[in-house]
Amino acid sequence: MEWTACLGEYEKLVFRMNTPRVVIDNAVCSTATLVKVDSARRHGILLEAVQVLTDLNLSIKKAYISSDGRWFMAVFHVTDQNGNKLTDESVINYIEQSLETIHFGSSNCSNGLTALELTGTDRVGLLSEVFAVLADLQCIVVESKVWTHNGRIASLIYVKDCDSGCPIEDSQKIDRIEARLRNVLKGDNDIRSAKTSVSMAVAHTERRLHQMMFADRDYDRKPVLQHCTNSPVITVQNWAERGYSIVNIQCKDRAKLLFDVVCTLTDMDYVVFHATINTSGDRGYMEFYIRHTDGTPISSEPEQQRVIQCLQAAVQRRASEGVRLELCTEDRQGLLAYVTRTFRENGLNVTRAEISTTTDKVLNVFYVTDAMGNLADAKTIESVRQKIGLSNLKVKELPLIYHQKREREEQQGVGGAVLLSLGSLVRRNLYNLGLIRSHS
Image 1 (cartoon, helix red, strand yellow):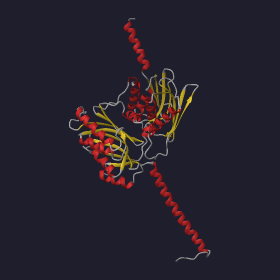
Image 2 (image 1 turned 90 degrees about the horizontal axis):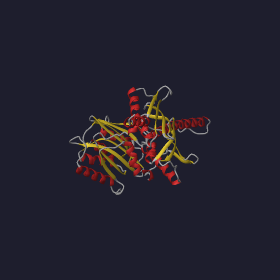
Image 3 (image 1 turned 135 degrees about the vertical axis):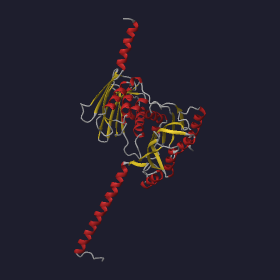
Image 4 (image 1 turned 120 degrees about the vertical axis):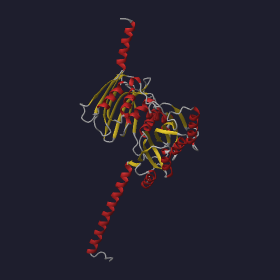
């Protein structure tokens, strides 16, 4: 056999070894679809597999991961958003194709848009100032995601030129955008940490947001106000005999939780060798056996504390605080600036936002609190809705504490009525016994 033919056969062998084998099984489990992935091990493959599933808004109910030696194996128990098994053949085929090509890398480019990256100190009205600047500079916001955590903000905003509808490539205009946005982010007290940058593509929006907040060291900052009473419980310990560090996480389960955790471990240059993921009710339980990329476990107490801090931040960044408002209406120039200005003028602060525009229709999601980070007043929410349009801006989700408050008020009402009736009964009995006089 000629050398070129041997080389061709060798390349085919390498390709088969490195191409993940994917099996999707609906028969084994009665409550979830099993997605099995086998592949040659390499750094980041777990994150890419989880990313494929979470980008489809699938829920990962259980998972078993092992990648010791040179091979990676994972089994994911997944459902759709309604908790049902996957039955749509187009979705199943897409998962198979996507997982089989993760070896070659995937990019979620900006589709001909200009990407703006912003980090800085969060404050009430900051988003309204950002969108006002973009509207003034004739930039159309097509997509955006905004996260806030521990008094910091990170945002990716995809824009195009208002006149041409094309990406913004004029270097002078890009410089003006960066300069004005940087001045907005700086405000009066963020001279050093405010950052802006412009690019033509981003690998993956949510992973990039994690990287931006990690680089901004949001995990190392004290929250302005501590509202979260359900913080994740995270422990890190070393298993010296096997050379692993074991990370245990217990927290409230939510969408994309596993992605957020694995993303942070990967970006911190840790390798997950084994993992078990489980959910029970609204709780999530995760155990990871990790090492550094050089094969060594976590070596010191300060490093353990840093891992705990970073994972707590990863869990909490996407945790939604406040009332969920959805804006669905016809798109127009300056709409975002107007809506967020209305929030600011009524003392509402945006803690998280997801903005998207398709065929002249906007679907925007905002999570809002009051200016101090507390629950927004219901009357304020209704006032804002009336100004923006009751049919355009709708309340889609209330925090649990709203329902708890309402239940307490109802219980107090019932309790008060019971006490009143008991008091009347006692007075009537005392009157009948001649121990008190009638006031009539």
